[in-house]
Structure formats: C-alpha cells, structure tokens
Amino acid sequence: MSAPFDVRSADVLVVGAGPAGLSAATRLRNIGVASVIVVERELQAGGIPRHCGHPPFGIREFGRVLTGPAYARRLIDRAVNSGVELMLGCAVVAIDYAEDIIVTCASSRGPLTIIAKRVILATGAREKPRSARLVSGDRPIGVLNTGALQEYVYLQHLAPFRRPLIVGTELVALSSLLTCRKIGAHPVAMIESRDRPTVRRLSMALPRLLGVPVRYKTHLAAIVGKSRIEAVTLLSADGTLEDVACDGVLFTGGFQPEAALARSAGLQIDEGTGGPTIDQFARTSEPRIFAAGNILHPVETAGWSWREGRRIGEFVSRDLDGQLPPPRGAIQLRPGTGIRYVVPQRLVPGGGGFDHLQLRAKASVSGALIADSGGKQIGKQPLKSAPERRILVPLAGFAEAKEDITFGLNEPDFETIRSDAECV
Ligand SMILES: Cc1cc2nc3c(=O)[nH]c(=O)nc-3n(C[C@H](O)[C@H](O)[C@H](O)COP(=O)(O)OP(=O)(O)OC[C@H]3O[C@@H](n4cnc5c(N)ncnc54)[C@H](O)[C@@H]3O)c2cc1C
Image (cartoon, rainbow, N blue to C red; front, side, top):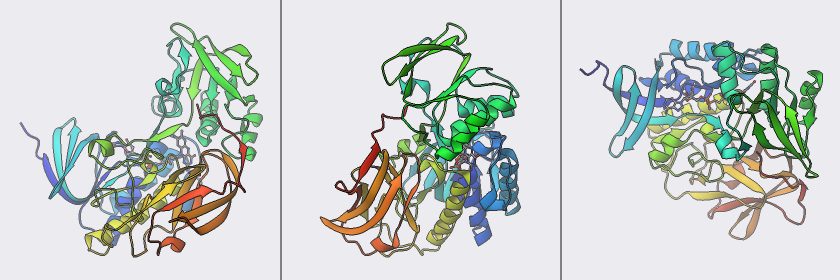
C-alpha cells in the first residue's frame, strides 16, 4: 500500500538539515518562497553540531557561545517557525533531471518522490575512514573517527575507550580532546605527520593544558590487538619504531565531501575538493541544482556554512524569479602551483554572486598568490597560509576576465615553509 505522501512537489528541495541546509531553507522562506522542503536522512535535524556537545557554536548567528546541540536546536526552531517543512528519517537516493527535477527518497514510511523546481545539495562532509588511510595491522574494535566518537558520547552516552591515541591536529582533533574529557578518557598522545600543527600554534595550548603529549613528524605504522586495541606502533622521522600501549585510535580530520549523490546524479565533480563544481551563484553543472556548505569545501566551521547557506538561499530565490545571469559562457577558475582547490570553479559573465573565491594551499606557504589569465598576470596578493586554512580572494577584480584564470603561487617568491607529507 502506498503512503499518503508518496509524491510531493516543492519550489525548493534542500537535501541535508545541517547548518548550511537549514539556513538556506530559512532564508528562502523568509524571502517569500512558498514551499521549501528539507529532507534529512537522520531522525533528528541539525547536522554535525547536533552531536558536538561542546562550544563554540553560534557566535555569528546568535551572538552568543552555544554548544552544538543548543545551536542545532535554534537553527531548527528558526527553520520551522519560518515555515520550512522538515522531513526526517528520509534519505535522498537519486536525483534525475530532464524537464523536471525528480528526487527519489527512501524512508521507513516507504519510497517518496519529490518534484522540485530547484534543489540545494547540503549533504556536508565526512572523515576519511581507516581503509583510506592505509594503516596496517590488526582489525580490533576501538578504531573510530571523531564523528563516531561524538555519536557514542553525546547521543548514546557510551565511552568507547579510556586511553586512545589521537591521529591529526585539525580543529576537530582539539574538539575530540574535549569529548574525551567528558567521558574521563585521557589520550596517550596526539600525533601529526608534519612538523607543525594544522591548527594555529596558539590552539595547541589545549593539549598542553590537558597534559596530552603531541608528537610531530610521527606516523601511525600499525594497530596491534586482536579483539581490542592493545597498542599502536609509531614511526618517527628518524625511522624509529615504537610500541605505545593504548585502548583506542581516533582518526581526526581528513574530510571529504559527502558527494555520492552528486556523483550518481552525473554532476561535474572537482578533483581538488571532491565536491560538485559550482559557479559564483553556487549552481552546479546542472544549473537548477545548487550546492552549499561542506559539500563544497572540506571543511569549514558551522558559522561559515550557515552564512554561505543563507547567501545561496538568496541566489536560489533570485533564480526562481529569473534574475540570475544565464550559466552559459563561463570561464574556468583553476588551481595552479601549490594550490589544492579553488571554489567556485566557474565564473559566468555579468558579475554578482559570491564576494570571494575560496582557496586552500597544498602545504604551508609564504609568498604571493598570482592570478594568471591567457599568459598575463591579472592579480596578485600576498599569501602566508597553512594547508587546511581558508584563503579568500576578492572576486570583483575578475568580473571582466575573458579567458580561464589560474591561481598559483609565484615560484620565484614563494617559499614552501615545509614540504608536507600527505595528511594521514
Ligand atoms: C567533530 C567535529 C567538531 C566540530 N566542532 C565545531 C565547532 O566547535 N564549531 C564550529 O563552528 N564548527 C565545528 N565543526 C564543523 C561544523 O560542524 C560543520 O562545519 C557544519 O556542520 C557543516 O554544515 P553542513 O550543513 O555543510 O553539513 P553537516 O552539518 O554535515 O550536515 C549535512 C547533513 O546532510 C545529511 N545528509 C547527507 N546525505 C544525505 C542524503 N542523501 N539524504 C538526506 N540527508 C543527507 C546528513 O545526515 C547531515 O545531517 C565540527 C565538525 C566536526 C566533525
């Protein structure tokens, strides 16, 4: 028997109820778009913050410091109060587009089809699993990433380990220190394959305060233990191998966009980000499908994703009113020397859209960023950055460019502060 809601229609369908999806949907309703549905595969809306039981969230959005769940609650309340329809426990499994955009969802109430005028993909990012990190050794339980740890601790109230090793020094690694503290776990060490932390050095005061030793230029060579983890083997830069007793391994960071849906829908994917390519209005290669939040750039803060979603809600509303320039005639924006990715990847003529390009460097760099178009330098700005840090370049200066633009580091000027091994 088919459920009463098995075919629905909407002006805009948002996939994913994290900060980006909820803010885009709320903005759309507040601007006056009549029907906005947000589909979320989990039984609760809020995205990642819902299981980050620590601050800081919400400074930009609510002018105060909130924990993740309190922040998620406020985002949900705003969305619902503005008239957004939330469909929870409902995963989008396919998107087809020809004349209409037809979105197929799976839920415990049965299959559901939604026909939408516009779609926004806001499916977020996920952490690289152990299999993709090529760590050898046994396969005992107790190997987690930060997302799984937070689900154990904040949603299921379980303590998966007491003495874990933490791999990585991104912001989420610091957040995992707070999560460990909440369950009384004391990490045996944090390790980092590079010779410096990914976060700013100042932030490394936190492991110091908590008495967690940090070891740089150190790799995880193997995990030891049959049913439970008993130890890890660490490899130092001088080739020394050392066994360290512990009962868990926490892989942190190494984010990649949750882009399976975008791929299966046949959208163009950027090799640098791993997410869909967009123009300066966040339109993917199918211009009626937009993308917002961490699916575009692994990985940003919740506040950034929220602000971006809000802006993209405005673009979508303007598109519904026929006010965006046509997607034709775009030039490509490409990463050059030392640059991992550039977002957006296309610039359509006529200006407007995002104020900035977002870039990431491959390594810690210091020098100048050069914009080159047709063999001519059309822009230059000083650059000093580390790998996972956001680099912003104002877009206004490139509105008139007629040929593709490459953004790269000026080789004579530019100094690689450190040549980075690939992040584990
Ligand atoms: C451990 C950790 C700690 C963090 N701590 C902080 C912090 O202290 N402060 C801060 O500002 N930021 C923090 N962040 C970053 C912040 O959580 C993210 O930047 C933010 O959640 C990104 O929002 P988003 O909407 O793009 O994606 P997400 O929050 O990931 O939301 C995406 C949503 O899409 C849903 N989804 C995916 N695929 C489908 C599908 N096919 N169908 C339906 N739904 C789908 C997912 O279930 C999810 O709910 C942290 C991140 C992590 C991992």
